[in-house]
Length: 411
Image 1: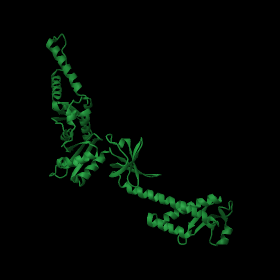
Image 2: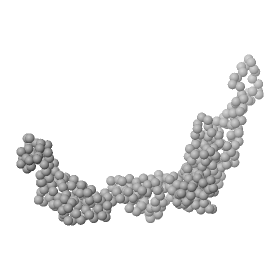
Image 3: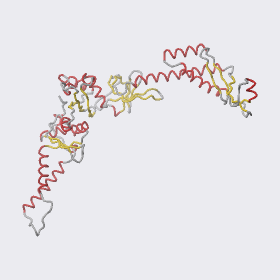
């Protein structure tokens, strides 16, 4: 057993990368438990392993005292001095108590410890390997699916993709090879567990890095992403080189680069817009493909603004079910209220008329109320009602019936 054990330890260290000292330390601790369990011994014991010969020895550790109360734990000073004149009170003395048949128990225990260490080492190796892929794209194969997860084989580890990470426009079949984004890797009790996603915004970022060399090397930088997975996404890019157009570079010749990403994501439409430090211009860019006439910031809310667009482009700016405006708001971080040009003009005229009206209303004794003044009050009230109605959030604005013509990817 001694030679076999030493050989097994050498193999573990060479092939599995498990240090011999780590296994020996675990083996000694396991043998202590095995000794106490099999020989009903509760005293302090130590097990030592001779790395040169492979022999195992069990020692009972006893403390030197004046008066012995428990012979399993203590030894008298006189008995200690009989062994060695150098012992003093409080010293620990080791007495070998290795049973004759302890070799069989030791061999069984050693096997269990080694197998356990091998499993732990393999789990750690796999965890270290796949933790490097965290926040990266990997290609996996769909293995199976249940009501909660799609299970994707990444090689030596099985990843899970929850329902919120699955694309609503995709159907996953066994043996399908798909690109997934590794959101996190956990070293669980049963082994490494990876979690992947197809809906994460960073998946889109990594796909652009794969398809656009200028984004990969940092010449063009992705500043923000707003995405409704499987339907539409907006990507804000800027160039660190004044001679390079960030939008054209990202789209590619004849749209080839962005089309590759669209195909990978099952037809998800893509709007590439230019990011700029000018917030008004950036908001206008984010509402692409709609034309923006003016951006008016709210003085009472630094993250809110009103956007004026031509009458005929109101539905285009809002988008189908408010999607274009919603994505633009997410991309810029602003609450965006979209109004048509005529609607904004009407509100401005109403505000100007209200500002020109005196605050104090004359009494009946001072100024008689004429029909004209009565008509003016009614008009002002009507204008105020129109202003209040037009100030509703963009989500409440009805979309035009020709929305389908406005959801094309940006060129």
